[in-house]
Length: 476
Ligand SMILES: Nc1ncnc2c1ncn2[C@@H]1O[C@H](COP(=O)(O)OP(=O)(O)OP(=O)(O)O)[C@@H](O)[C@H]1O
Image 1: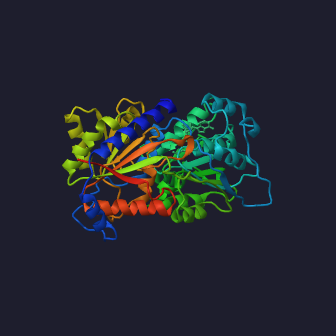
Image 2: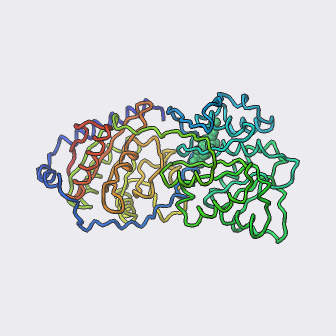
Image 3: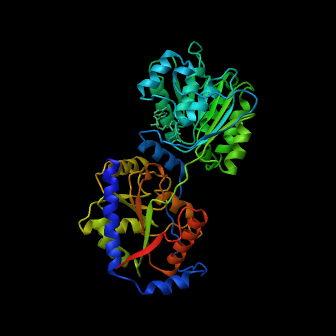
């Protein structure tokens, strides 16, 4: 949909929401707010029954499955060179990289016209002679996978029939996704072959691999190098550790990755990629990659400047549902996402809305990742206008065109404290194109009013909103 029509749709929604808001003023509000202000969080039985265990690998896979394009970013790349006195190269075209013609053909066949922001600096570093080590961090969808795949394909010698590049991924599914990119990019370079070192791939004892690129999960790669000796680690020229943040979240993967790395020659190029960069990831990265160059592409800060935030006071889940029905016409002019705390509530709400004759999609943690991707894709294509989901299930998913976010339950962490970042990320927009939106928060207790106030204080402290930004509008 063109941005104009989105803007118009949001204008209509805002007008509708404001007119609804002017109909009723809830007298309970002041009392509630006063009670909630400064009040300690009450353990009021709203204990988080959080069945959707956060699964970083599944989220990462989901993002890959639903993404068809590069995420645009206007943020600058931050570079820390191992040798600050050496010149820093960055390229604006793939030609400047002097790639093998078969690879350039592969890149263009994938529809890449020019390097992405992170690729502009990462590619010259990875393709330099002698090879340089690299730690790179940028959010999902900014072109990291494509970058290291191109580096691996550039470094192999197709004449040599043994593994030369080793890439470890946290899960079988993620390894397959990277494998697909290798196959696509190497389409015109058939001499280069790929093999998957994953659990189900059983090879006969004594096998010596002929494929130049091995991609797999840490446990199997380690077995293939150490116990089964299908791979000669000393002949590896490029080692890639992908999704380091997901890797360290999985028990055992960190140790296995370090053990693989120790078997590789000193001259082997080490490359590590991560979407986030907490201290734990950083400590791990330093153990895997000696003398690294470091590239970071900051995530663009979400701003709430263009978002109108409202809240609705209700007494129960049923009242919240009623309030939602009252504003339903207004929110479905464009597309809306409704967030619930648990799968149970999400399922209940989707069922109730359907019974009212509304067409809604449900995204739930019980679904397989592929099923979830299919639901999101249908929603993205506008086949459904409303998506009901849980806080955990949709964390980290970007559905850019959503202009209405309804927090049926406010986001809280596992200890019941406000999850400020999730709130910001969920309702925020990355400022570009001035995308506008509407956020409606459903408050059904002192506890949740308190949560909302604390979230607002946080947003204020981060200068993401002004003090007038949150308005009460609707009651049922
Ligand atoms: N230079 C480019 N031009 C156009 N599209 C690109 C370019 N590089 C990558 N892409 C595409 O952008 C999308 C995201 O790229 P990629 O998967 O490499 O990002 P990523 O940072 O590795 O993401 P993730 O962390 O989720 O793995 C893919 O669909 C990919 O084909």
